[in-house]
Length: 504
Image (cartoon, rainbow, N blue to C red):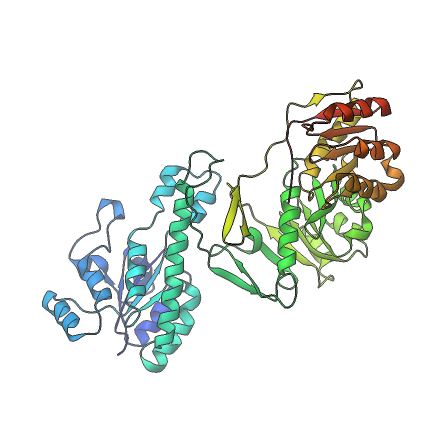
């Protein structure tokens, strides 16, 4: 057997002309649809259009081109005498190679100006049918769904006239994964009503984007799965070795936190929890404020910045060892300064559509939840003393920061910077003690945010003893009155938000 006829119908025309030219040089007849045929003709390659093959024009504004027995029978025909006789009786010839990539549905719905009408027009029908038909008949037919496979397939054709059976099987598996992921994206787009809805069924099919060196520990295997063409966390790695499993987790946490603030903000994360958060007008000074929150823990951490990372901020790093920096962009000066830090990865983060829900694995299933967007807009002052203007501004900042700290979570802040963070502890009072210890003398005059209610007065008592002046917490404990009475006794101002920020 050998590859004699190829059908090409691609949206992404990267490498198309060179690949098709190689096929022609190997004696392969080319059949192509629409824009693919036009691109090949413009390159001087002889090509038969789909309309010439089927004897019918493209109809319904291009929605129906390749959905015809002359094409699908030519692809699905097995190598049996009976199937070949059926083709001959109809005047058709087998198609041995199918090259298809799909309309950019995911890219379309990711745009800020995306509309449902525009999304519907980017749902590929004929392409998916071609891919599935060719993949089903991989015993005879080779299917290519990505330009990255052109070179290897062409080499096999030039060498032996056909592809190897193991190649056809591998490409078929990849093809089915492509169509499954495509359908899953469409399903997700149309599932539920409203942004907060959870789908009645989850369909998750993502191709392997890259193997990672290892997981959390060297004895664990790990891989990143992501939509085709989407880099790690939707970003582009500009510098440094590939991101590790732990890097990806930490950067994701840092970027989520930084993106939750409107003002220029720096977040430093170590082991999935922030150790420093600061907002400010001068980015370099903002970094210094975030670092001062816990300079010991910041060593070997990752940094996320919701503004382009500039040269002054790059210089402000000093000799701090940083695993990775994520930002919307990096200035030329920053790139030049950071180029000497070969071990520091730079990730330029591109915008992705908002997450409708997050997933976590449990044994035997998945947990899904909508994002934590509750900020508790209707705060209620519950103590005799209300926070002054300065305290209230700091409380607002601390309340937003505490949302990103592992529970039990306590954040001490002054102005728009954390000065002490205690998180990931089973005891809330111990989390207060840790935050106070980290803050040291800076606890005096600071405010405190707690991700959940104080079950006893002991947490506020520890905070007040260190000089904290105001507290924000959800409220809702059966001992709220005891806690409020303790705050009044200690001269604290305290607000209830009515919203909890657990993060496990």
